[in-house]
Image (cartoon, rainbow, N blue to C red; front, side):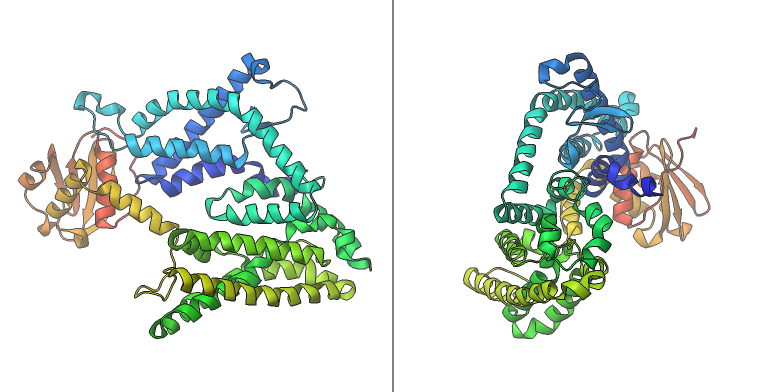
Length: 475
């Protein structure tokens, strides 16, 4: 059971590579995720093969049992690029997908378009990336190890740098690249701070020594304090700087976000608002979070406090309260000061520089990843031939309200309509580029050709209907 619980953490690179494609592809995100999986594995096979034959050229001994910087990903011994490498490779794959997936090829080459074209184009790109990583990444690994060593031996300065980087990189997902070696790796304590704290929790609870002496590594586990001290101060600044007529709506918007942040440590609505509306405010947030975490640690506060109040209470307050309540009292006293500081600093900056935070304009809302995705999709869908073709088929089928489901086989768009009487004559479909139409009551098949996956994706978006791809079959 213990080993099974580490499944996600042991395969984070795969999840990041697939997840980025699933989240950032302009269209056909399911196909993009599968393409990312195949091409990312291809990349790792290339790296493994290059190092097996020319490892000494790059200063890497792939065959050494204890080789540093080497990791097995799905059984492939390759460079341990961590989350950053997986994200970089996946970003390239997404770029290839967005460039190639919808590209129309001549009919006699139609079998090679769509995902097949993405795979064919991505293959040499992965080889080039593998060569680049083999040449560059060992140096990057050495630099990262040096940074980790510096932070772990730099005392309070190391705690500040760690917390700042962990918070500043949060919207990009790269914060795991900073935190994972400390939380689950050997950067500061063998096995990581989280497992170490859990193994010694009963021992720490029974001791009367200060937590900062019992667990001096705890300075690298205080980033969660900004979730329930910093975010409330930010929300108060939003409320205070909002137009008077918008304050009730800002309150309704911020209260759920504050509750989620405080209790669970989930801060995405606030993080993405800073990133899109005023990036400077987010880096101010990271600066203040690092500063107050360092002050807390200098005043004797320590423990596993990297999440929200629920987890922090279960792992800190409840078991430790009897002998360490003074440390927690100090923590909340400094926290109260941090709330006030956040409020005053954010209020000043918002008013001084006129940042368009919630309630300052007629639009009162937070921004999230979906906003980025929708804008990218809208731009990509613009005036492409597939979108025009799909729009024509949608009109011929009676409009979006008449569509119940849609799918596709190898050459046909298969649609179920609510009222077959609203479907136009075959000429309306052939005028849009269709080869023909097959009708069977409410089931309509539009014969398009091998470009049907791209057309189906555009059609699904326009009709706001998500249907699964049918298994390719003979028509």
